[in-house]
Image (tube, rainbow, N blue to C red; front, side):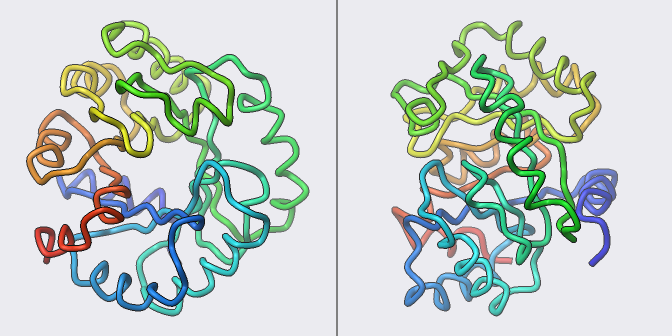
Length: 241
């Protein structure tokens, strides 16, 4: 497979909208995966993200193997922990939780992942991960013991994203969190997009086509949807090719 990151850059250069469907190993049952993937393949989805905040060991690998039987789309790990790293995927978002100050999620988890990544064929993509306040506590907060950046502190969000870029991150991921009451605001997306030159991912709390469109129009290069599909399987019908 060609470089996933280079393909992302190429698609962005052609003003293509990229859509990632996030599959949580804790929530996706294998018996329902075939039907789910059929709908996903018939949608506008361009990437499959796999991961969750709390996932039992080895469940992710089993799920990724099954997913790859049903799609030719790139399967990218979006791990909440080292235990979710598997060589069966195509790429890994090497996430650094820049919005928090817990050293475990700034560097320690990364060091522990190296033994799994050494000699791996996974394409590792350094990603600056920013959790943005959305109106409720998220599982990411509970697991990482960090606070999100306040949604009205746009300058801090922008400065954090810019710092991530200068540190060498290849992607910036603005996240409201799974099941967020509100998605990342248009003002935040626009402000960050104006500041950085690397691709911008936006996810969390996007439950409608209107919110999806707003994220793209505000500057998101990749939009991630997860809960919307979990709660409303007909959402795929609204995103058919």
